[in-house]
Length: 88
Image (tube, rainbow, N blue to C red; front, side, top):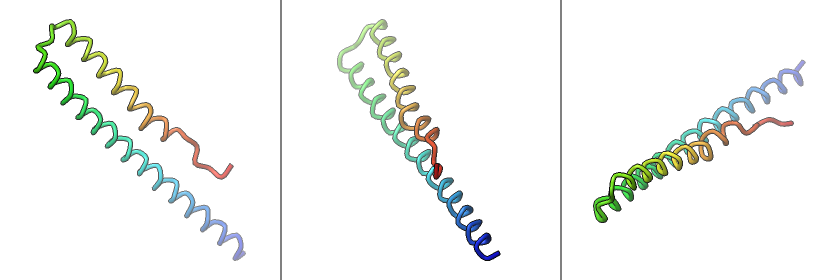
């Protein structure tokens, strides 16, 4: 009976660790994407302000920013959260 109780405690503890790891992965990913986005926006604004870009290039820059944002969100948030954290 004691061995069954000990193994249940271990499994509960492992489940808690998995949840903690997932929360930290989510927080790290969100902050990485937000800081990268803030740096990209500042860079785009500085480039636009210094070079007086025409509207067509502004649209291209905006599309590139959104593409990078989606790619970074997938790489830093979605992909780590979809990774299996089991004992298999």
